[in-house]
Image 1 (cartoon, one colour):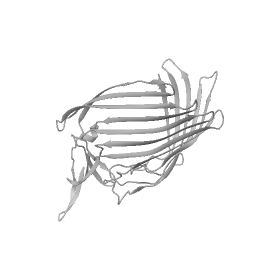
Image 2: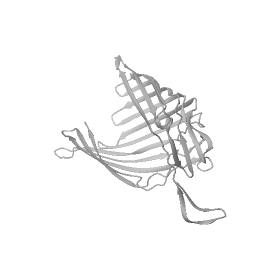
Image 3: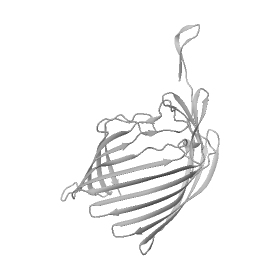
Image 4: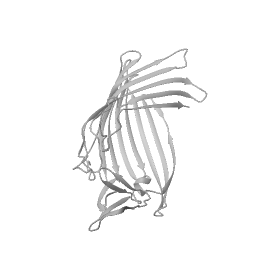
Length: 325
């Protein structure tokens, strides 16, 4: 929409003129069919878990009449070593296939991140192929549980955005295959039983990359809190679960080409505190019923998630029903 209030040399118009532009953001469809098989094989202290998946995609765009289909395969092989009743280690190797989604292929969208910008798709994108490995250890002792892992991902034909400059009056970015991206990092979590009902827990993770000009990776992220759980006999309510937890993310810098470094070079660190309360009603005719409620961002913190430059919601409450069947 463009509103014209005046013209040079003429002065103010009696009535403003309004020009409307009709844009189709996307009009496309995609059909995906997938099939997978997985097995678990035990031999002594080892457990082997091989798996294979096939996916076929068919896409059609009504705007450009583009039509295409492709078949991709993914596979994984995990090995678990049980070193004792409490301690085990594992190695997981995988190759994953991801076809471009409809937005990456066909969208023509206008977004407003300070100034109107245009993001367009590229219909003939190549699918991504990732090779990943993970090595970890898990422990489950009487009052302590922990997990720790390190991982490495090698992604070929990574799909991201690149700047085309100003096109038709808009700063324009387009999805494209940006080549190879390597990601590696560490993650871990621990839980400790204070009593039969109270548990302290914490988790931490960090991802690194040598291709920060292509992909954003947040800095260290932490989650920590306390959980209370109890069971109730001879009552409509069978389970009670309450969790108070915080989440902290360290300063994160956006180095991608389209970051707009002059405006948002860095996402400041933040901490948000949340509370969740759940009541479990046990088995019903439809399944296990649970009522969930909570309060997010208790202290009404102003923060931006990496790398999304809009402020996140302040204090807010929610309620929901979960049915497991």
